[in-house]
Length: 221
Length: 79
Image 1 (cartoon, chains in turn orange, blue):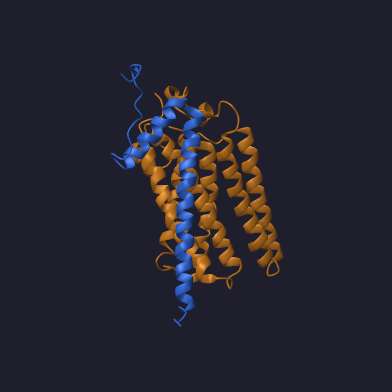
Image 2 (cartoon, chains in turn brown, green):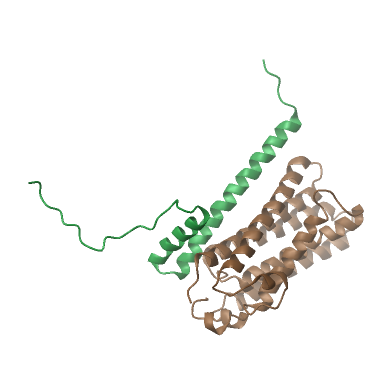
């Protein structure tokens, strides 16, 4: 069986979703670190791009369900870790999607929790973003493609630089120990993802190891 | 001389423009990655078919497959 155009729409929309999600994270970090700098613009873009992420994420999910190649159905898109196609890595994407939607629902159009609660719940976005990166590399048939890989690296480097360069450097003086630990954690997570990517998704034979059904192995990288 | 719009209106308009620009860039990147993804797996002829099929599904009737003549076209001289 050869992939259909929807299969390629699924893959391209998935990558754009990750890029937009990264831009949303960077704008969120910018808003938190420099609250006085163009708050209307930064917050407005943060919200608008989050909603745009939902649109591209919806296209990504819809294309994956409608496309016959991987045999995914609505249940695979709703219930994590049950699909026959790359179950673990696809499941991480489903969980990331739920976390992202939850982060939006508690914030838009009005904040639904007391400020302190909202702030911690909003930080779910970082976990959702890490899961989305893992999903992109683990499920993504294009993980080893030069352009996709380059865009993934730009997205990860952008979020990491924004977090350490803006958020950590701004808040460090208030609590050096906490923010040093958070910076170290962020670097460790990115380093671990890079090592795993080199050892896993970028190696030949990843499709089989990731759980691609045998019938699709001849056409999946 | 017309009055300058208040800053809030300017910022709103600027935000609208930025958002629209990002949406266009995202759509262009999406199209580029679609072609990149298809090109990495499909033989040359199939890429064009995939693009045409995708465009047709979005805008039915807007594009038609390029037909290749099955018979050689015989050109005769003017009589």
